[in-house]
Structure formats: structure tokens, C-alpha cells
Length: 485
Ligand code: ADP
Image (cartoon, rainbow, N blue to C red; front, side, top):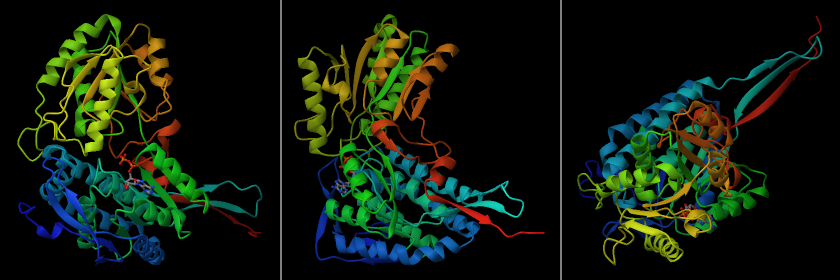
């Protein structure tokens, strides 16, 4: 922490109504690479969450009424501050979350790119005029902000998951309260500090950092002043929170778990497929909801593909993310390591073959070695559950139709990837995959211009693009009558 150039970015309490609020109790933030406590943060309560909602509610009318150009300018200032402080924000993120510094700085740029995108989109919230039925009527459609937005976000992208929700909400004219994951609140609080410096008015952006997720979550999902709730996290918690929102009929967006297939057809450029898989699997040590979970390789090329892949994996450098040239940091927690290990051991028992990795770097560390498994079958838990770790699980297939059917054989539908150079196949497979996002000859597909989101039990709603803004807008129909000439 002493390495931060701007110590003002290290905040240790929640922020609402433009102010920092102390608390009597605190919780520890630990560095997963070392186990060291790096900060203590004031533990906000459900009552604090209510105050934050009240602040967002009080600020809404003024914020919504400002010209879009003014909201846009403030968002632009905020994104510029993120970029100005990219090194510090990246370091803070690596220290609390573990991902390598280059990736952490990349996340800051990625978060900032949403602020920029939605600052631009804020000025393009168009309504409609519709030909009316009667000669003395006119029909118009207005787009208006939904109101106060509450969000709950996960630890794997402590900056970007907040930035991309807040950017769209604020651009639309909504005010915003977020509860970040308790493992990674420092990035969220730094975002609040920069919102403050950017001149975002009091009550427009609020952060509640606390350990009682259930109690804070009850306020955010049940308070009638909250018009929309946006969640990124696990499927089970998402389902529960969606139920809680039903009582006040909130608009809900859910970005939940995935089980991404990565299909390599025999006609693919195998080197490009290996590169794409490495990027999609090992980013953030495999801890993203769009990370490849199942790799399906056509029988005739699986031997060649496995060899190339193993070579690429052997070059990965594992270590503390603040050190130079590290590719893989620690997993987030003991539970995360134990879950990855359990899936791996079960697969081995059921006949999977281990090519490399397969264990932690040392017994008491959270570093899990990059792992390659083959001979995976559809019945194994490792095929059906989200691995969320640096483990590649290879299975083979013979026919295109079989690959599509197996890729779709999951309740999830977030991201899918495939590699092929046959244009007919590309269309058939792209249309056949039941997923919200499909990477075709690409392993990294997120960007602010594109709609991010899932189908099936991966959730609903979109983030990024014009669709992401629409999620924060109400459609109001005006019928103007009595226009007799
Ligand atoms: P993960 O397994 O990725 O940690 P979670 O769904 O448990 O996913 O966590 C995502 C976010 O949801 C975090 O901010 C966490 O604190 C929050 N959360 C967990 N349980 C609850 C709950 N019962 N009510 C509200 N929020 C919760």
C-alpha cells in the first residue's frame, strides 16, 4: 500500500451522500498472494444501506433533470481520472484480488472504457414519434431514467463490474448504490473517491461496503425507493435476490454463472485456437464467468491440439501478481482452491488423464498450477459445474451436430467460443449455440460497444452497447389529443 502514489485512493469506509461514513466495527482485507492483511474497512450495516438508498433517492430528481451533455461531461471526467490513476488503481486491485498487475491495469482501462462509452451514449437517448390513429392526435415516446438503481457485484472484477453498471445508470439519469464483494471493496471505494473528485454530485454514486451481504441485500432488493436491481454473481444468490425483488416489482438484471464451451473443429487454425483458448481460459486464473469451462476438440485434431496446448501452458508463469511477467496469480480463497481440487480429483477418479499441473504450488498457498486434463466425459462434475480455476478440461467429438448438442447441454448460456474456417459451418454453429455471446475465432470478446449478457439460467439484461443503456430507461407513451384544426 505504501507504493501507491496517491494515498488518497486508499479509502476505508463507505461513501454515500458525497461523504465518507465511519463505523464501530471493521473487517480485514487480505492479499490472496500472501495472506497479509492490507487494510481494514468500516463494516457498513443494513441501516447504512438504507441511508445510502435515501441519499440516492434524494439526488435522483436533480440528476435526471440535468442536460445529458452535463452528465456526459461528468462521466468523461471520471473516466479520465481512472486513466490518470491507472497504475495506483491497478496495484490496489492486484493487492486485494490477486490478478497480475498487467491484467489489473487492463481492467481499469476496461472499466474506464464503459464510462467513456456511456458518456457518449448519454447524448443519444432518442425517443420516437409514431403516426397517430386520429387526425387530431400525436403520439410520442419518451425515454426516461428508471430511478434509483441498486447493484451487488462480485470479487473477480472489483472495478469493471461496478463501472459498467454505474456508467449506464448514470448516463441514463439514474442514481446508484452498489454493494461490492466484501473480499474486494478497496477498488470500489477508490472509484467513489474519483467520482467525488470528478464532481459527480452527492448521492449520485454511493458505495456500501459491509460483511452482512444478506442484510444489506435485503435493503437493496426490498426498499420501494429502488426502481432497478442489477446483480453479477453466482446463480443461486442471483435467483434468491430476483425473488426478493418481486415484492416491489423491481426491474432486474442478472449476470450469473456460465459454463462456456470452446469448440475446435478440424478445419480450424489450430495455433489461433490455442491462443484463443489460453486467453479465454487463463485470464484472472480462470476466475471469470466467461472463461472457457469445457473444451470440445474434433477427434482428428485432438492429438495435435493437445500437444500445442501443453506447450503453451508450460510457458505460463505463476506468482504474486505484483511481480514482473506473471501470468497467473493466486485463486481468491481457500474455498476456491478446494473446489477446483475437488472437481479435478473426481474427474481423475472417473478416468480423466492429467497432462500437467493438478495441484497447488505448495500445500498452504492459494496458487493453483495451470492444469491440463483430457479424456473428459459429459457426466463428470467438471463438465457440469463452473471450474473457476486454471484447469483446461478436454473432450473429443466426431460430428458438428454432436458438438452443438453437447455445447448446449447445460442450464447455462453466457459465453461460447468456436474455431472454424468453413463459412457455412460458422453460420450453422453460431445460430445453433444457445448462448448470449459467441466468440468465433476469438477468445476475448468483451467490450463496451457490444451487449454482454446471457440466456437460460445465466441471467437476463445486457451491459454495454445501446442495449445496456435501454436497461436503465423507462418507455413513456404520450398521447397528445385535441389538436382540431
Ligand atoms: P461468488 O461465488 O462469485 O462470490 P456470490 O454470488 O456469492 O458469488 O457473490 C456475489 C456478490 O453477492 C458479492 O457481493 C456477495 O457479497 C453478494 N452476496 C452473497 N450472498 C448474498 C446474499 N444472501 N444477499 C445479498 N448479496 C449476497
